[in-house]
Image (cartoon, rainbow, N blue to C red; front, side, top):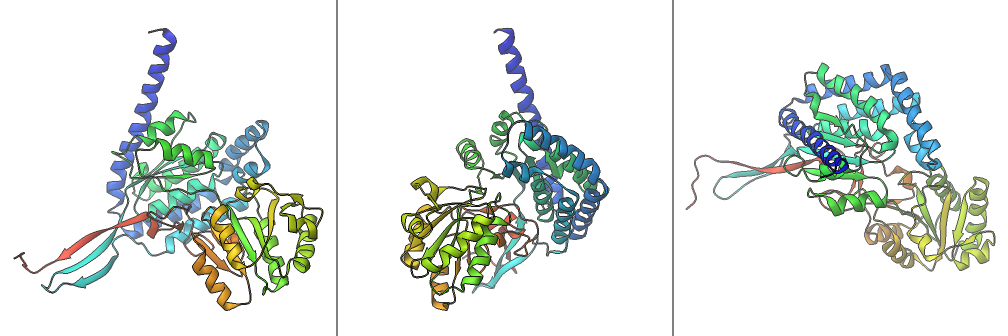
Length: 430
């Protein structure tokens, strides 16, 4: 074996040993954490929140280095926005941890208790999943959000962020681990993969002995890579091709406000609107007014033939545009015949993330809710509300677009499973 091959082999062995050791320690921590009292977990969450604010300058300084390096590598404005931390942003993350602390602890909850004819009482008890591996890109806030939810639900977590946020993630992770130690909980319950080598992900995906669930958060490429290489069950946080359908009965002032918010408020996130569908009966009145506001906000519109007849400044949309998650100030626009046409479009091109109907017709709203097969379906509200914090779950761990075992924003309950418990008084089977 050549010296170069021998060195590479040794590096691979060292990396495998590093990731295996992290996973083994996480498994040990998960067994201890699963028995922790709610008060201890809540104390740690509050200490985490306090620590993020007290050490904000340290975290932001580390984050600024990540931002500068990402900018020098030509990352998009949307990616830079996702990875940038501010004092206000850290305060929001800290508040999210505090909100998780006041939520009901699902661990130990007994549900569906019933009595059998022979007197046996049969029910289910919520228990942690165990060790959760989260692989994500760009957003250092995920480090704290995921750690907080996993802690409260009794799970250990292994966090592997993107190379563009390695310093930010390590800094946040240090604060979180210190809070665990101060609260008497295992420090290894929150761990950050400390290397950017992509092979670290491959090593992580082999460890079904220690890791119970993998959650990838990022672009389509990342999710496909993880799904194709994992020996561990994968819960997909897929792309957000979100739609707003403006029905013929819509209040047009409301529709304009919602559509502008859904696209413009923060275009680089998965719950922003990517396609606007408009009923043909109101297209000639609604399209010109809403297009002007979009143009004023710097949005590029890509539309169907009918859209371009009404607003000639709109760029011609291609077939690929209907599938696209732009994550920037670009919006696809299509005029549809009716609600069924809108639903068929969503079924074909959507990603089962978030869809909204703007309507004053109750029967249409119910038909849309029943007919759209996405994780979150809204009536007269911006798609931007599909977020764990906004929906009352506390900081979310992701939005699942696969139906097993969770669908939609994942809060505490979605990070647990149930085991059967059976209570008897001496019964034996005949």
